[in-house]
Each structure stands twice: as C-alpha cells, then as structure tokens.
Length: 580
Image (cartoon, rainbow, N blue to C red):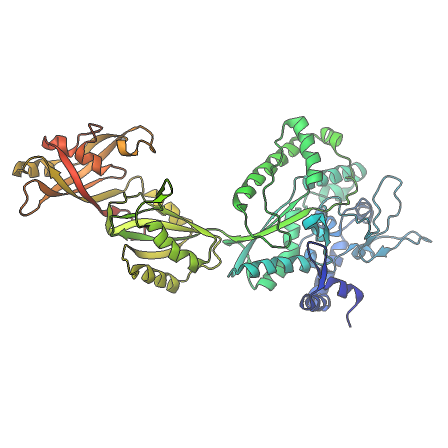
C-alpha cells in the first residue's frame, strides 16, 4: 500500500510548476524508504543525536536552521545526509516538550515554542514557505525554477532524477563523474551570523568550544554527501576525479545583492557578474559554461575573501544575527559536460593547394580544403562533441607540402559524449587515409589527456625542421658553391619580419640558426638545384633563400653572390619526440 507521503514523493515537479506522476521514481523511493539501507541511515542519525546539546538544537530549529545544516554544524559525518526520510522530526526524542502544550513535532518541520525574540515559526506553510536561514533551501532540496516558480523536492531523489535525465538525454557515455557545486557567498554570511548568535548565547559552554563550527561540514560537502550515492546508483558510475563533470550552480540574487552592496560600501568589492545558462529543467546543457563559471568563481572568491576580513562588529552592522526569515529559495542551474578530449598524432599534407586551417579572405575561400577540416570533420562525429579546435606544432604555407614523418597536431574536442577506444581510433585513421582525394594523411593517432598538450608545447620552441627547396639562381652553379654551402654549420642569421606577413605579425628582428645545408644537383640543369637544409624552428625559409630585399641577412643569395629564388618548398621532417 502506498502512503500519502509516498504518493507525494512520487511526483516530479517540473520547473513551470506542473506535476506529473513518475511511477518508476515513486516505486524506487518507496522501496528505498522501506529498505534496510534507509533504516541503517536512520539509525546512524539517531546515534548522532546523543552527542548534541538539546537546548542548542531547539534554538537552531527555532531560528529556521534545517536538519542537515544542524548536523553539519556539529560536524556529524557519514550516511546521515543521504537519508531520504531526514526531517526535523528526527530530533523529537532529544527535545523535551512543555507539559500541557499542544506544540508538537510534525513530519516536515517544528512548530515554534515562541517567537517573542523574533525567532522563526517552524511550522511549514504551503502558502508562505520558510527555507533554511543558512542554506536557503539547498539542503532541503528546494529551489527556484524557471519563471521564478519555487520547486520543492521532498526527497533528494527528485533532484538526482532530474540530473540523470539530463545526462541521458545528452547521450553521454560515462563510467565515472565528478560532482561540482557552486553556492552564493551569502550562505557563508548566513553561517557566520548563526555562529555569532550561538556564540553570544552559548560561548561559555564546553560543547561550543569543542564542536560547534570547529569541525563543521560545508554546505557543498553536505550536498554531495546527500546526493552522490543516489547519482552513482542511477548513473551506474563512480564518483571521483573524472573528465565528466556534473555542475550544480546555486544563486540567490536578492540576498547576494545585499551582501555585495554592503561589501562595496565597506571594501570596494566588485559586484558579481552572472552568465550561467538557465537550466533547471535541463533544457540546455552548456552555454560557454567554462568561461562564465571561471568569471563567477573569481568574483565569488573575491567576495568570500572580503567577507572573511570583516571584523565581527562591522559584520553585525550589515547583517542581523540570527539571519532574517527567508521566503525565497536559491535558483538552481545545472549542466553536465566533459572536459576536452585530446586526440593527437602527425599529419602529412601532399597538396600545394591545402591550407593548414580554414582560410577565408573577403568571404572567398583560399585553397580547396584545409588540414583542420579534413581531420576534424572525421574525429568530431566519432567523439560526438559540440565542436573542436585544431592545434599544430607550427604551420606551413598553403603552397608547402608536409612530408616525412609528419607534423605533430592535437584535435581538442569539446564536450565529447564518447571517448574513442583504440579500435575506434584505428578506424578513424584508416578512414582519413583512404579518402578519395588523398590530400592529407595521418599517422600514430591516439587519445591523450591534457599531457598531450604539454608534450607538444615542450619541444616546439627548440625543435628542428628539415626542408627540401627547389631553387633557381641567376648564374650557373659551380662546384665551389657546393663546398661553400656544405661547410656552413650552425650559421646564425638575422630575420626581420617578412614583408608578406607584416600585416599580421609584429615588426621584430629574430635571430635564427641554420644548422646545416647541402645542394643536390639536377641533371641537365645548371641554374636549378635542390637545397636541403635543417633550421631552428620559426625560420622563414623562403626569405632565407631570396633575402627579402635585405631583411634577412645573410641569405642564400648573398652567400652565393647572385640572385636566388625559391620555386617550391617541402617540409621533410619536424624533429620532435611526441607522437612518433
């Protein structure tokens, strides 16, 4: 038989306030309520009661502090927070009821024993709900949904169900997840106000100096303790360090604005800037979430630092102790996303009409394709990501081929739903290499962590590159020229920013090293030859050959004492350890 409370808990309240019955959720919650695990968690909670001072618990309840906040303020740990039946009624064995009084403990809250000192009424009202004066409803699983409609969850399962639906709707394949929680700084202010109130009333008590707020658990950690186990079960995944993140962001604009205005007046603290996408019902997943979270996180950290520097008497000038009655819960937004997947390897480019990245000038595309698009367009669908970025260790001009062992590259896939297996990577490599046009080839593809980026960047500045250039000179090539060129080792040259790239590069003088050179004659030609050379990374090879009107010195032309022009250029090797 299903009780009235169980039927209520089986309703999933959507963000626009409409209720629909989810039979599966209801059955799961009923089963959990009656299971040994639920009973075990209740026993843990009852055992924890023995160490709590009754008068302090009654006082905290009377000023509107929720059950989970009371437990965390006294440093109680374990499975207590994940008990779906946790409510103020759990304290009934601890509290003494005045004789002849009709006041009693109710299922979802306490009636007040008196409010002559301005304490909150603990009797819940559907018309005028009161949320925890510290956590603002976070640990009561209540929040403001879309259209500013309050969504009250009787069990944490309702919250976790919403998160799981989002993860599954987005199609993420996971075996682990990392839970991140962001709370507004006003909660720390509320906690401090309660601490000052309790210190004033109970500062001389032994339990206050030993336990109260000395071993307390943060709201973030208490929320994680409440919902992590349920998420692990429903997602069939373990919580821990993971590339897949579930982020819950709580905000309370009205209360936070008051705090920020107070700090602005006293300390010049910058006002918080919002930018997280509204996503209570999971309709949207990630809208530049990383950037906005970073900005909000920095602002909140600054507010928290300013708050911590306030002396108690200054703090009390701006905030009541205990905190005021709260009739509005926090707004909850949540997103799920995967940190970038990096797929690295080396690419070879066989065409002199393919750019490294997509190249458009005045709405006109340059070249027939790009390395970036050829590789990225085959990697993105397999990873099922939102988009990608292409990174390479240097670049070659559109008319320069990339041969030899290839150039190291990374494709950074954002919010990938699938992490490719070794077999998938091999199939991906074969597909790119067997394209009909055969413009680009890849080798040694592999899935990497962020260390792939480090590997590629570590050797980039010091790497050497080898080239083969078809060169024409204005006079016949002599045997002495071959000996002169071959004898030059580790020659230092000075290059000013080439004229052809001045529109996009700073005008600088750069010292580069030509490690070695050799000339290969072309049979039947006296003025054409192949120049093979090895240089420091970043050397402008075309300008080294013709001199760029004296902007590169010495140049091949100045060494040979004649005019020199480069007709074709190939990169034959990029000497780096990564992806070999």
